[in-house]
Length: 68
Image (cartoon, rainbow, N blue to C red; front, side, top):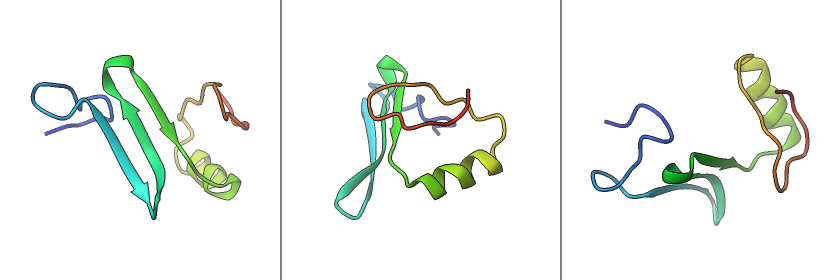
């Protein structure tokens, strides 16, 4: 059982995990690099930050705001 987004590691599980929303990537994780990307609207992002106050958000390509 994987308990976190980076627990998807070879050889027990696929190296990378992708969840789709329609035809678009919604959540992408690259476990061996400890990278995770989530695509969401500003309203979804605000709701997520409210629901999970301890959420850490780091900058990167496509980063549009948030708090660390």
